[in-house]
Amino acid sequence: MANKRPTPEEIVTKLRQVEILTAQGMPRLDAIRQIGVTEQTYYRWKIGASQRHWFERDAKGTVE
Image (cartoon, rainbow, N blue to C red; front, side, top):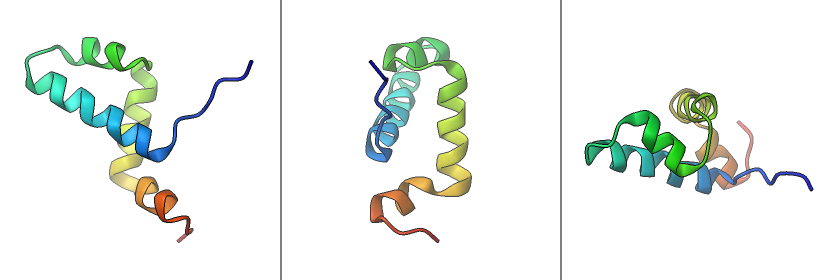
């Protein structure tokens, strides 16, 4: 069975969960593990969200 890729909305939700958990005092690596992704995936999502604005573009269904 193939793994399902998360939607842009799910990615944003997971990134926010990490922010909340770290603000509550949990170490970043533990927070990343808790959302169920690897450290590499988390950082790739974070960079993509800040630099390329994929989430807004994908959510609108348009390509700039």
